[in-house]
Image 1: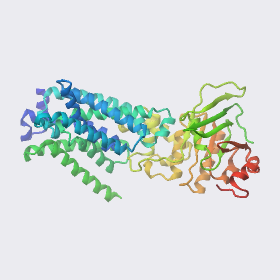
Image 2: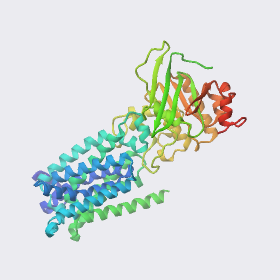
Image 3: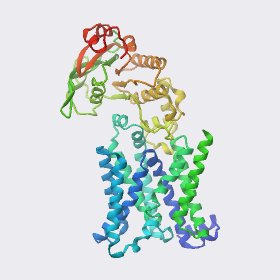
Image 4: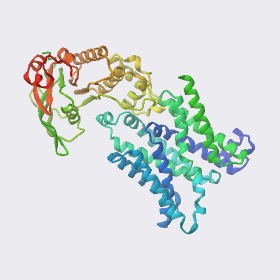
Length: 279
Length: 245
């Protein structure tokens, strides 16, 4: 860890990064933002922005259930619940019974209500309010190790899923005629997003997680012409927002998560203008 | 008629499809010969798309679909290529024709880039359908006719035993359609496959088809274009002298 800290200090000779908690936060940002930026490309192409928002909200229920069941590990409770929730939404969506928007909204509001019901019992919610806005300055070296492993795992799975998922986004029936198991692929992607969201939520917060998934990818979409450019822009903008936002939050004394999101929103506005000029 | 390859055919034997108590297809039997262009005609709701979906194995059906050689022995595998009528997708997606085709034929995720070999393969696929110039074009900016060529290129890889095309009702002008059909005729000559086309343009059917099947839940009549167009069943469905549906 000391070696990594040393490198960071050499690269970023800023006052802000004298402290280890800022270095840890920086490393977390460097791991999280590209992960979310990459997954975000397909979330926007697959029109799943609303879905990932609902997924973030379900973290509240996950923790609530974890408490009811007496689990001490919040992360595990959130992960298990997030994945189950994601698969459920996916299955209901595929059964085609009602419009996707409506289904997701039902799931989202139910999970928020259920989470609040449990967490706010006896006026205890203040204990969990950090979950809403996240706290990236509380990242420990051990968390970083988990994040690194998650990043590697996600990228590997992502590599396997991407092409069939792309075929599915363009035309599911055509994809099926080519032997792609579209439902399995879609659910696999949804689970991947669920895992990434749950891993990040403690640092970014329920209210902002979706912005980190969607904003860089949406900006990238405005600038890119090919799949590769989309991924590159999205990851680049996610990283830049993370870096700039975290640094700015130190000097402005603002919430790191919120500052990062504001910076990505600025990137989005710029990307829209660039797109308008090109047209 | 033209019969470049008499070796095999696809044998549909009494195909029926029911959904929710409704009969969509009733005992459809026909042969689709290798090296021939078989054209399916009929009015809207006649079950043409249903038959295609049954052929592609996407909906359950009664009856048997066999792929048989000249001696009537089963060939175990039937590989189908499919060109859908329309592609309903998000036209703003950052995705080139090359990205799309590469995602179908290569395992390497296209967001990491496209390898040299795959690039060459995609170019070849597009060359085969006279659409090489489209490689770098965003998929969402292709015209109806261009998109149809891209989809044809995709349907031909891997080489199918049966190519199924659902002809677009709109979005392609007659000139574009003629060029597309000429490409198809060229492929029919050079490749070992059967072609089934759902068509809405009876002028083209008369000009290009080797075998015509008139469908109305079941097969009303089938034969050469001359035979079918002269039949009383055809007059009943399309009226006499009226050649466009």
